[in-house]
Image 1 (cartoon, helix red, strand yellow):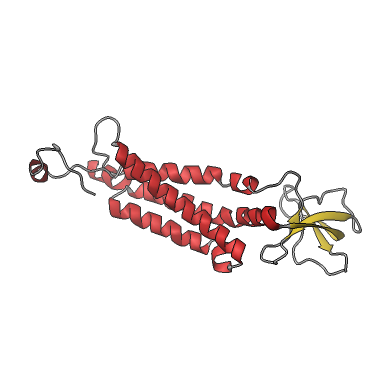
Image 2: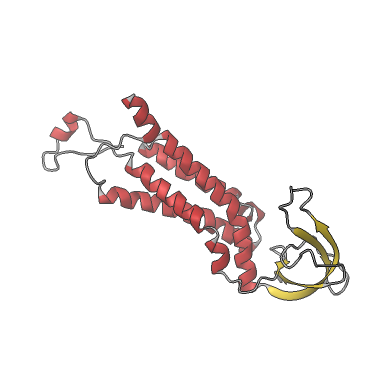
Length: 226
């Protein structure tokens, strides 16, 4: 049972509080992992690189973090939790990154509603209304707008949308008070959870050295290894 507990949750062979440097190592690993996941998606959305903007690179960063935790000897259950949180963050990041790009360089324009679809019936009554729109020249937008589109919206109504002048991010309905911090705020819970799980995984990977090794270092009393 002790062996299984060690394999699943990590050895955690310390008494009292974990060493401060171990907590710092976990914070660094989790922070770098979360920063790499979000950063690559932001860079991809800003520069128009689909392989980065779609979150694929974020999944690679998640894999790198889980490999690191495996190398240091973290418990398998904690590695799985970190991997799950990293995947969720990588999947949530593209929408937030697009919002950051539009908040930073987006341009406001007026479009005309051509049709309104009530998606509630298809989604059990919880879906949003979706508006198909066209610009002032009559050219339809490739995406449907849900912000500002509601039960009272009718074909011919005008909606305000924010579009990327460089065409690297799909247009969205204008949102009052939207800014750069708003989209990133949506990622905060996933980021905090990923960093916290990484800290726990690293801290619980602490293992005392063999007695023979400890005797070889009388100045420290014990040595550690992964």
